[in-house]
Length: 241
Image (cartoon, rainbow, N blue to C red; front, top):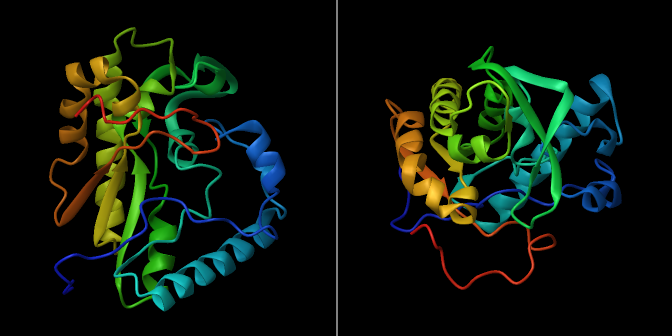
């Protein structure tokens, strides 16, 4: 699919409409790392229908604005992170763990109690739906293996590098399914490369390379300083880079 020399795209999430989520509840708790079903204003089949409607609005907005590489704005997700992170084997979601976030606050996260494995495609159906809504190139984002490792309580591996590599294999399998489902561009969200640069230098790039192994076409790795409403006093540069 032909693109201009400098194509435009959304970096990450798009504002979800108030009729879809309870924004006050979501913002009050901070970005969820485990599931947070209570933020949705619909349940069951009605929720899927409402999310489909929201995706169509997001796509229409991007096309109207002239965006070249369209996304679904992650409007089906409670956060960029938790939809994939909570669908993997090896996680005990009934009893989450607690780690410190990049702001130093205790945060509920997936608790790793066994080998991390992907049991099924997570975002493939959403990708096929997005593909059917536009003739433009599409991009799909997933959390990267390093960030997945940083936002988990490891009670199985006792080795962050080994955990990261199993996360990388799970992400790699997901990316392959996303490409088959029609994604032109896939993106790894890796904000914790910036937050934990020393660990990132030890094994972050190795894990990212493993996650992207065999993935054709354009791939993206996204770093950031975190949500503006959460992280205050952002640094002036990317310490990892």
